[in-house]
Image (cartoon, rainbow, N blue to C red; front, side, top):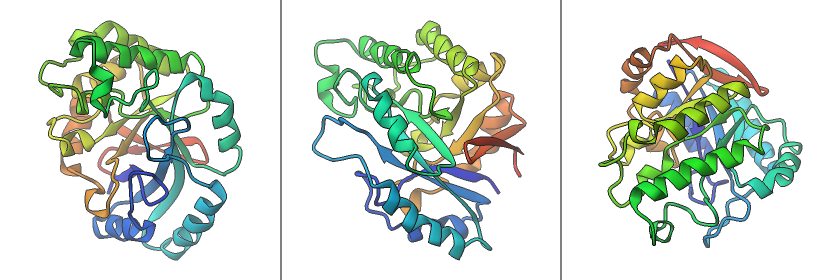
Length: 267
C-alpha cells in the first residue's frame, strides 16, 4: 500500500495521458495515494513546450481528487526543471498554486538535455556525467523552494553506454557533496523506479546512493514511478521493500501542503 508521488499526465509536454485514467490505474493497483507532478521546464531547448497553466491544472485535478476521495488519496504537485537563471520564475509559478509537493530535477545542463546526443559531443561519457552532477550543485547553490530532488542520476538513462561504466564510487566526491547539501537544506531525494523501465536494472538513484544518503543522515525519501502513462504507475513496485530495507530505511515520505509525512515501509 505504497504511494506513487511522481507521475505525469497531459499537462506535461511528454505525456498524453488523461489524468482520470492515471487515477483509475492507481486504484486498480491498490496504491494508498498518488501525487501528480507535471513538468515545468522553462527555457527548454527542444521543440516540446514543458509548462502548463496552474489555474487550469488545479481546476482539472481538484474535482477528480474529490470524486475518488473514498478510493484513493490524491495530492497535486509539480516537477521543476531547474536552471540557475530560472529561480524567480519558479518562485512566481509556485505562488500561483497550493502545491503539495515540489520535485526539483535537472533536465537541462548548460543549454542541453542529456536525452539528446548533442549533450555528449566533444566529451567522454565520464566527463558528461560529471558535468551533469556538477550542474546539480550549481542549482542547489541557488534554489531552496522545492521538497525533493528527482532522479539524481537521470543522465545515465541516455548516456552512450547508459550505466554500463557508471557507479556511485566513480563519482563519489561530487555525489556526496550533492547529498550533503540536500540534507543541510532539509531536502529529500526520491526512489525513482523508471530506471527499471529504461532497462538499467536499478532505480534512480542507484541503491548505493540511496544507502549513502541514509548513512549521511538523510531521512526524507519519496517513492515514484515517473509514469507518463497509466500502465507505468507503480512500475516494479514489488522491488521497493527490498530496496528500502537494504538502504537502511524503515520509512518513506509523502508531502502534504509542502510538509513531510512519514509512513512505515510497507504501509
